[in-house]
Image 1 (cartoon, helix red, strand yellow):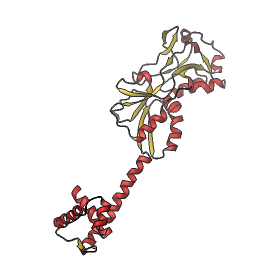
Image 2 (cartoon, one colour):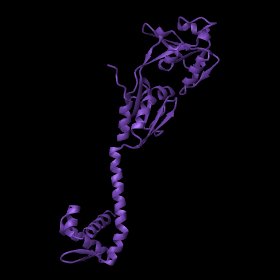
Image 3 (cartoon, one colour):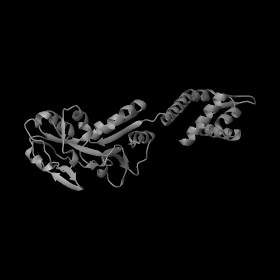
Image 4 (cartoon, helix red, strand yellow):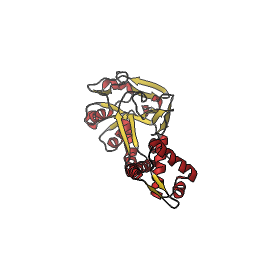
Length: 298
């Protein structure tokens, strides 16, 4: 098949140039090699395709029919090859990402918004998933998780600063309840809880003081498996919630939320994008990783 294609390309070039000499120059081969190729094609077909004279080359009736059929298809192939070369200049493709809600909203989206505007041929699919998805088995290109949740056999690139949580409630909630001074006092409060996707257990609120960790299991009327509803419940005065600090920052500044136990909050490793070490990076993939990479403030 490859031999026939090359021979047909040689025939079309000779027919268009009307000269073996010029066609050999276009194809970058010797005139004798080109003549041998055409003779071989004619021998396999059992038909003369070209009429040769001392001054010119012309197609026979059969050659003209073959030229009419094959030449446009050769042009289409060349056009498609040219289109493929544009992918090097305009990266394209689809990149599938699995991540949690907080990272999708607060970390990915501010960086994805300008990225997709700059690269209109790159498609990005984001799947919100609270479990620790096997990105290889589920055929994701990359995942986004906190640094301490990334498997050791993955390549990990930091895409956010470290994360600090915040315990918050509305001013209306505290109108009839005392503000807790220590995590132990949370047992006196209506807390909005989180059910973990991986284990199914209720998240134990994590604190730290003087280098010592403290986990507190809280009680309350409401339990969710994602962050946004817990923040909304706190805003509506339905209880205390522990949420990523950057999600509550504006509401705290505006007085819609009150932060408590700030000096008990530990810092967690920031979000990382991760992917298998054996993955072959496409231009689109490499560009997205570079766009997501966290740059430390100077």
